[in-house]
Each structure stands twice: as structure tokens, then as C-alpha cells.
Amino acid sequence: FQIVFYEGKCFTGRKLEVRGDCDNFQDRGFMNRVNSVRVESGAWICFDHPDFKGQQYILEHGEYPEFQRWNSHNDHMASCKPVRMVHRHILNINIYIYTYV
Image (tube, rainbow, N blue to C red):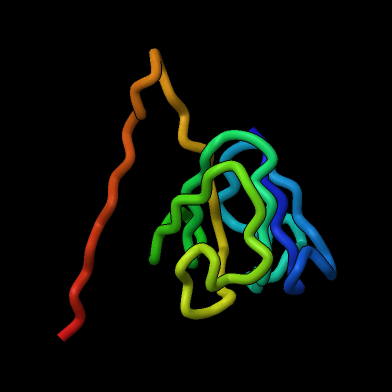
């Protein structure tokens, strides 16, 4: 599993390479602003808050040159983890939908 986050659009600026669970990008010296992503291998669940909380985005192998490509409304991203599969079955993906009134 490998994913690379970039601060700038079109894979520019500082980058953060991740190969497993990362509960807080800031702990690795990377701010929570992500404008482009390359998923080198595997599928990933990315979150806009630390500790795997907040809005979730599923990113599969490929390139995402701007945040709109993963259906985000802003450049906030703060944690991620790979989707691990066993015998071709997805292991434990929890998707929570919140409605604010």
C-alpha cells in the first residue's frame, strides 16, 4: 500500500508518502492541506480530521490532481488508512453519515 499527498495542485509542493495507517498528518510534519493525491497502490480511506474522523473519502489507484476529483469541497485532509482485503472481501469499512440541523 502506498499513497502520496501533495500540498499543491497537480502534484506540486511539499509531499507526504504514506504506506500504512496515519492517524495525524501533522505528526509527520505535514499540514492538513492536500490539493492533489497519487494512489500508488491499494485503495485508501482518507479523512478530513485526525484520528480517522470526519468526512471520509475512498481513493483507489490513480491520480487526483485537485481535491474536486475525490469529491471534496475543500483541501482539508488529516488522516488515512489503507483498505485491507482478505480473500477478496473488504474487511471492516464503517461509513457514517451525519446530518446537521
